[in-house]
Structures are given as structure tokens and as C-alpha cells.
Amino acid sequence: MGAGKPVVEFEQPSSFEFTPENVEKAKAHIAKYPEGKQQSAVMPLLMLAQRQNGNWIPDAAMHVIADMLSMPYIRVFEVASFYTMYNLSP
Picture 1: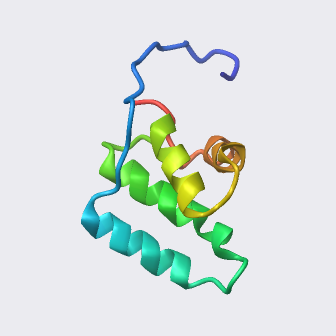
Picture 2: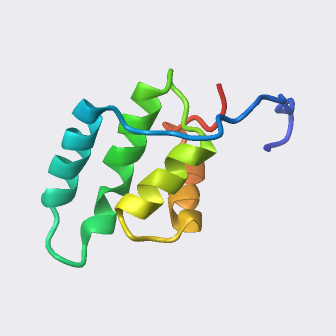
């Protein structure tokens, strides 16, 4: 955490699933990118997860996104933690 920010304890959900509607939206985002470049869809998928989950992205959602994009979880976390538009806590 950054200087001056209080550490707030909260419970992470044990699992995450995109709604059927958001699965279709995710597939549409992924399809916009050429073969081998699908990982570029990480940002719109993070936003979908955040909107679905009450304006924050749980750890389990980042694992789902990593699996969907065939990329390491840590790469998804790096993007989510770098950009201030993504909230990693409620």
C-alpha cells in the first residue's frame, strides 16, 4: 500500500465466475485481437470483472481472466495493480 493509506482487512471470495452475458462480452473482446495477441484483452476483461463484482476485482477474478487469456496470473495482477481505475478491494 502507498504511504498514508490505511490497510483495510476484507475477505476475498473463494471463487469467481463471469455471468453468461459477461462471458459473451469477454469472448467478443478477445476476438478483436489477432492470434497470439489475445492477452491484450486483459484491460477490458478486468473492467468487466470489476463492474460485475460491485466495483472491485477479487483475486479469484484475476485467476479466471489469466486462464481465459492463457497468461500468468501475475501479469494480470500487474496490470490491475498498476492502473488506478481498477479497485482491488471493496
